[in-house]
Structures are given as C-alpha cells and as structure tokens.
Length: 596
Image (cartoon, rainbow, N blue to C red):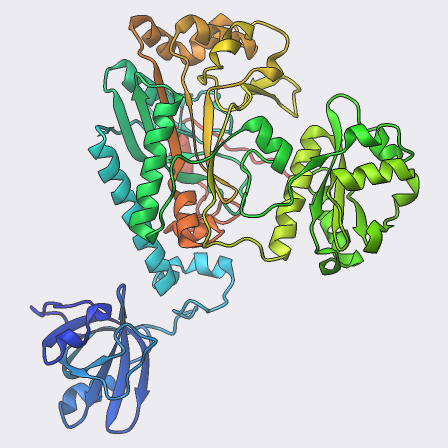
C-alpha cells in the first residue's frame, strides 16, 4: 500500500466539466468499476460528488497501467492526470463530456469483495443494508440524502438566527417525568438506585428558558422515546425545537411556515404559497378520518348515520348511537380496479385498525347497486345513501360502522390504501396545511382515564379554561397546532400554560394531586412563581421533514445509522448485555424472566 506523501486532491470526481479540459488534476476515491481493453484500462472513480472516468494507457505511464490492471472494486486510490475531452460522450453522467488520462496512480488501500453492491438499485434486504451501513452509505442516493439533511439543518440555523433565535443546548440526563411515551432510563452510579431519563423532548427546559428571559430559543436536538416503531419512527430522532415569548398562536405559525417555505425553496426550488390552509381537528377527522390528512387526493369520508338508523342492516343500525357512526368513502369511477379479492384485502386492512368489517357497494349503470348488504335497505334508504355519497356508475362505495375512533382510524387508513393501490400519492406534490384546535384530553385505551392529548403544558382555548374543572373534558379544545405535509405530521406545537394556577388545574384534571404534581414538576411550578411571560413553541421532526424532501417513505433512509423495527442496530448489535462489573458498580442485578 502507498500513502499520500504530500499529494493533495485538487477536485472532486463529480465536479469536473469541459471547462477543466487541459488542466492537471488530482482525484481520490473508490473504484466503482474497471474495464481492461488490452492497452487501455478504464476506471470509474467515485467519491461523494459522483463519478469520473479515468484512462490508464500503457503508452502514457506503464507503471500506472500495471497497477491499474490489478485494481478491484472499492479499492481506494489517488490519481494524477490531465483532463481531456471524451471521445465517446456519456449524456447520462454529469462528467460524461470529459475523462482523465492518468499519469500517476497510488494504491491507498485494497478492499475485499463487498457483501452488498455499491449502487442504488442493488435490491438488497434492509437488514443487510443496516448491517453494512458504512457500505450502504457509499451509494449515491444515500450520500445525496445526507447532504440534503445537512443542507436543511444549515437553512434552519440561518433562518432562525436571522429571526433573533438563540441556539441553546439543554441536558440529555434529566429527571424522569410522565410525558406520554416510555422513557429510556439511565442508571446513576453516583446516586445509587436513582435514574436519569433521556429526554423525549426539551419541553420543560425550553419553557424555563422563556422564564429566564431568553425570548427566542432553538436547537437541533436528539430526542428519545421507547415506543413501538414503524416506517416513520425511530427510538432516537432529531427535532428542530423552538420556543418564543410574548407571542400567540398565529405568531408562531407565521414564522414557522415561512421557515418551511424557505427550506423548500432552497432545497427543491419549490415555491410554497403562504399562508398555509388551516383546518380544525374536528374538520380533519370528519373529512379524512385523520388529524394528519393527506389532501393530495379526494375520497373524503361521508357520514350516513342518520340515513341508516332504522334500516334492516343491524350492523349499520346499531352503530348510530352516541359515540358511534356509519361512514363511507366513494372511490369515484374505480370500481373495476378492485376485484372481489382486492376488496377483501381492503377489508383485512381495515381490520388491522380494529374495524369489524368493511361493507361495500358497486354502482352500475342506472345506479344499480351490487352488494351483499343491498337487500337490507328499502328504496328510499338506498336512494338517500347514493345521493349522500354522490354515487354514479363505476363508483365503489366502502363503509365502516363502529365507534367513531375506530371508524375514523380504519376508514382513514383504507382511504390511504386505496390511494396507494391507485398510485395517487405523487411525491413531487407537496400539500401543506395547519391542523388546529386539537382536543386538550383523550381517553387512554388501557386505563380509560383522561390523559393529555399532547402534553400537560398545552393551554386550552381561552373560552375553555374555566371548564377544566367540569365533567365534559372531552370537548375542551387546545391552543395546539400541527403542520401536515402529504399526510405526515412534520411539526407540532402549542401555546403553553404560563399561569401557575391554571397549570395546577390542568394537573388536577389529569388526576394528579398537588403533592404528585410538586414531586414530578415542582421545579417548573416553582419557576412559574417568578414572572413567566406568555409563551408558545413548536418542534419539527427533522428526520420526517427530510424524508419528504428526499421523496422516500422510510425514515431510516435519511438517518446515517438508524435502528431496525426491533430497535436494534444490526451493525453494532446494540443494545447488548452489560458487563457484570458495570452492573455491580451500578448496584443493579438483572433477572431476565423465562418467556417460555
């Protein structure tokens, strides 16, 4: 192997163009592929900027040619040579108009045959990609995505700094507090038996920064939540976290949507029209069955409960009492796209979201209805259903009847699945909106008690504050707002409670005694005694935002070293068992129960 020994790179491989012809250059990188044509060896050299063709000619430098003949895939080399116009140009390569005639070659390192191909269309399993992530990251698409992520972070820093935000770090080792998801706990050796928690967000500290008078804060920060994973979730993720003093909801929304507008313009050259549309939570659920509606396509939900409350189909009739409903979507003109078997698969999809079934009607010529449930409706009821659903020949109507929460979730997901199957999800379109007026509380499915929809520091609407002590907690609305892009919640925030009395009311409404509140959040309540300004904030998921910008639907594609769906790193095998001596120092004994 050779060393650089003073040799300096002059250009990146992908940056050379016809303007560089006749220049002497030094390139360094990895061998993508090699072709030996006898007296000539062609090498495609790759670095993070792209590819460049290198020619080793035995008549130019016999020693370099002899070395080039022995090169293999992913060998690391340095090349000195002269830029020339390419005889046979390649319009598919940015550097396809030029090539380098090598005068010197240094072999810096060899490589074994890689277990995965270093190309974008390698079609290898995700688990293998994660195991050899350092090789996977050599792929052009992966490097392009990480560059995009870096670009977004820089745009955010510049934008917020120009708008008088200070970047301030908050602690990673904090007190465990109930904020929703499970905490990752860190045992303390110095304080035996006690634990830190890794932050699910910097929520409490950014509120304290406003109490401290910092006025506008931000950081791009790691957060940690021990929750079940999916394609757009990771146990550790990155937030663009912001907080502002002396502001109201609209002030935060104005400055944050301008930041997103700037990001889209500077990364994709996409113009985002402002202000963004605003939709209340109630409207989003009624129309789309989701608080993060994908508005790139139609198929909105329609409520037919009033029509079917006395019909002969008991599944529908029994679902028209309080808290339940019958709703449907009209897949306009696409009935022929879904066979009976495919409708069955849509029903299976609905059942994964707790629906008991998925009723359907096919609409033929003259609005003739084909459906196993059609016989249960009289002519007046059927006509009313078809009119309400705007049903015409060629339409497919799909219905769910259940508790409202199940109907919204299941039918909203069926709506998305239909769009996926019809290829309606255009990743080059960016439909953005705000969703506002979320419920303050929601019911915990396991315990049945009311919990905070977002977190216990979110302020109710002014007109709802006095009802915190009442029994109708489900109707209380919050000064909360989410930004939604293409069906993804990319950011969420709220106006915070800044009055100690109101905060105590909120804790009480959550079933928390004054003593318990003091134990868990005493430091925040104490701070509220010393003059807290009106404050509000917002946090964006950087990973999810970059995922949308990169045109992928897998958050692992935009994180350098992600975990798999089991929260395991296949590359490092984390998490792992700790050494016995480490556990002894922490006074911890691990007893793993036999799951069999």
